[in-house]
Length: 122
Image 1 (cartoon, rainbow, N blue to C red):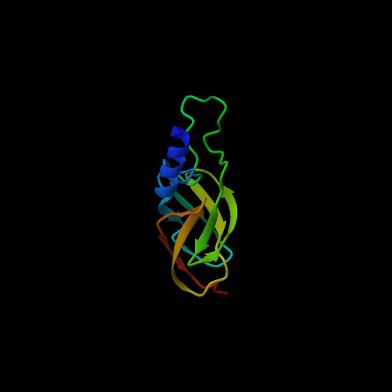
Image 2: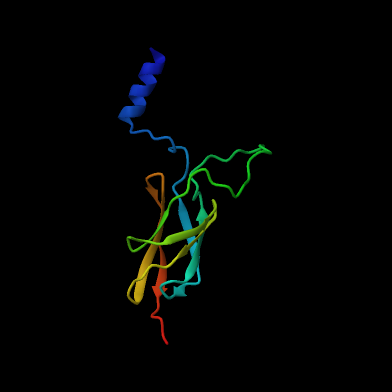
């Protein structure tokens, strides 16, 4: 009875498996200006959306059980590497100007960081 009540309360509260995790959060992007085809790295925290296994010697602190997508103004970039604190991705073919870069993992999106897309000058 208690278990059924707990499931009901969780369903009513819209519980998800990662409710106890803070949302992914971005702090910076390097470089802050890049041309399409260039690799950029966004830095932040909680990008894996997995609980910290404090005290576990078996867990690689940089390994992610969950990886997400990197969007440049809703256009996906090609992810090259992914850790809990940084993601490297290739800038997609976009026109010059400012775009917001967002990481989405397990249905949760980060805040955006600004990237200035530059043209490929000959």
